[in-house]
Length: 225
Image 1 (tube, rainbow, N blue to C red):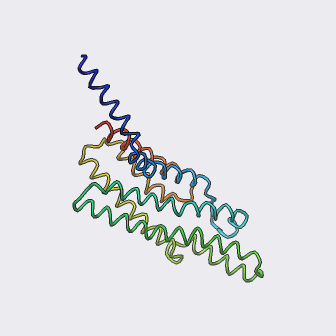
Image 2: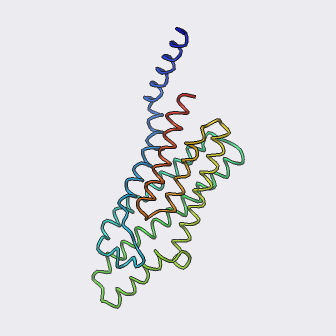
Image 3: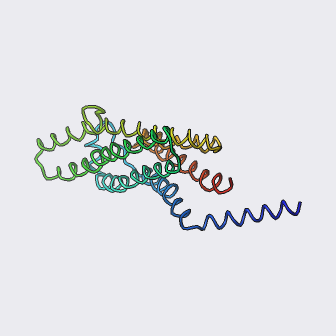
């Protein structure tokens, strides 16, 4: 009994030291902190509705600020996925890395077009004549409501698929390594959050689920394994 207690205390001290390790802290900030901030920002995402130009004109400054923050945070989400794959080799890991690359290229392009570019268009249209504003409104509405014609929607779909592929690869590799099922399943919150992007609170809930799953894996399973 005494030996078991000593072993437990020793393991607890080792875990505490590991948590204070700067590398562990940095990894935690990237893998947990960045998605948490992403979830918070998504909570304040204005709804574009069926007529985006009309809906967003009164809140264009908020729209711009939210997307200016989302752009780097979505990028950090992709980097986090790459870090989760970094210790693995083989076909599944390679497929996952390709998924990360597709996600980063396509989804960040979507975010730049659908978020930043539309905000600039709406802002600058304020000084235009009525007929010119109608032209800008038509462009904004197409970008945000037409999945194919708007191009941005197609980029979002491809980027989300890339994210899904990366998460599935990570899930397979983690389960092969003995990771518990529940936090691995929670990683699905990442692609779910992307699908629900712009629909509060769905996007926030999805990313928070991913965040909780990663935290469980990083500070629960890995440190105590």
